[in-house]
Amino acid sequence: MPQRTLTIIKPDAIQQRVAGEVIRQFEQAGFRIVAARLVHLTRKEAEGFYAVHRARPFFESLTTFMSSGPCMPMVLEGEEAIARLRKLMGATDPAKAEAGTIRKALATSVERNIVHGSDSPETAATEIHYFFGEMDLT
Ligand code: CMP
Image 1 (cartoon, rainbow, N blue to C red):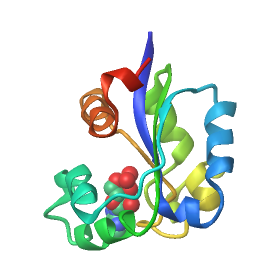
Image 2: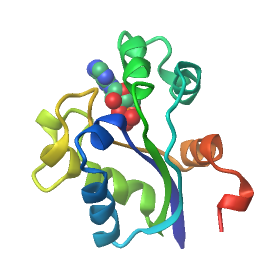
Image 3: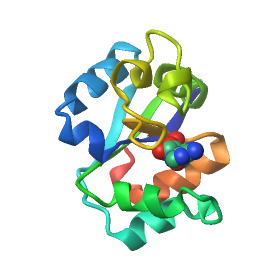
C-alpha cells in the first residue's frame, strides 16, 4: 500500500540552487509529489516543527538555519515511502552518508544537510499536517 511522507528541501538547497536536482532525484526514485509549498519559516514556526529537539544543544542553531531563507515542504507518496526516502537522503551527517545519496552528494554539514524526511508513520502524519491541510492532500 502506498505511504506518504513529509520532506523539506531546506534553505541551504534553495541557496545552492539545487532544489531542482533534489526534486529530480525524488521523481527518479518513483515518488509521486502530492503537495508542495515554498515558505520562509519564522523562528517560531521552525521551533514548532523541530519541537522534539528542543533540549538538544543544536536546537538554536538549527532553528536559526531553518528560518534563514525559504524552504520547500513537500508530501511524497510511494511504496514504503518513509524508509525509501530516508535511504535516498542518506545519514544525517553527510560525512557518514553512503555514496549515491542526496546528502553525500550535496550536503555541507550535519546541520546544513539539504533535506528532511519523516522518521515514522506517526511523525509523518504530524509533519504533513504541520504544513498542509486536507484540501492540499489530493
Ligand atoms: P533533520 O533530518 O531535519 O532532523 C533534525 C535536524 O537537526 C537534522 O536533520 C539536522 O539538520 C540537525 N542536526 C541533527 N544532529 C545535529 C547535530 N549534531 N548538530 C547540528 N545539527 C544537527
